[in-house]
Length: 250
Image (tube, rainbow, N blue to C red; front, side):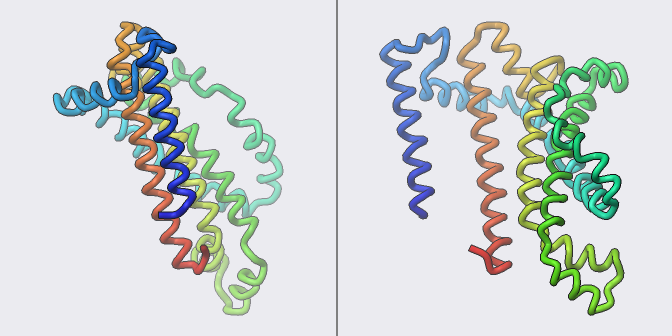
């Protein structure tokens, strides 16, 4: 285990221990926050009973659909925008200011268009994720060494073939960063949308517990989402490490 990993784990353990202590001695009241051990116990009971499985399925399906659509369309759109400099100069200000706009404000519009289904939350998750994917694809393509492009020219590769066999593989590190960000933003968009109006999902359960002053259920769901996000991020980081080792990078 790396020293940095040990330090991260130690920091998490210390933080949880301190939070447990201040909750137990009453510096933080149960009305505000319950101890981490009580969160874990509540989460175990919810998982053991199976009560959160339908909502977990609803959220994960929304994240997977929104994230996958954002990743695929983001890479394609990034490659197209990169190939059209005038279009890129036009869209750059939009990419820069995109996340200043609260996309959740358009939730009523999506409900009107798609009804009270899972589609509005998937659309919002997609809209949150796709621009991160486009921007990181552009960053990766910008950093492809010129010698790679010259090599493709020397080997008489067509434009599409050079893009697929030389340019995009070289941009993989930045594209993979976009993948991690896209999945994170998809989580934010989907869970946030469930909190607002959806009739199912983990965000809906958090909203219900919040309005019911049920801190056990509230923090159990929050803990579950945190653990799920950490697990996904660790898995993607491990995969990224494998890709980098194959490319001969540390």
